[in-house]
Image 1 (cartoon, rainbow, N blue to C red):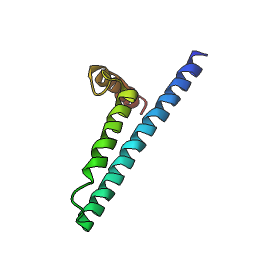
Image 2: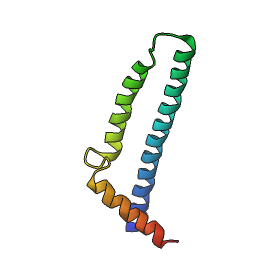
Image 3: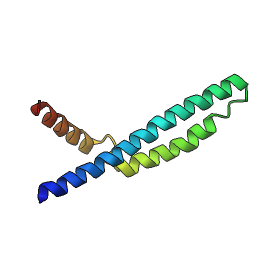
Length: 91
């Protein structure tokens, strides 16, 4: 029973992380495209407005996914170390 709950929680966490990583990849792709369009049209460098606005959204999304302390803090390091140790022992 407990393992089922842990599995559901882990599965949900994976979905949340996947959503964040897709958000980052989309952001990078769109910003590069906007930069290219701005450069090719000689439009006065407007691409940084979406870069800044959407960047704020990315930061907010990161805080909701990782939390303020969990965002590359000591808790994150410990958890990532344990995860990697477990993955190495499973090979």
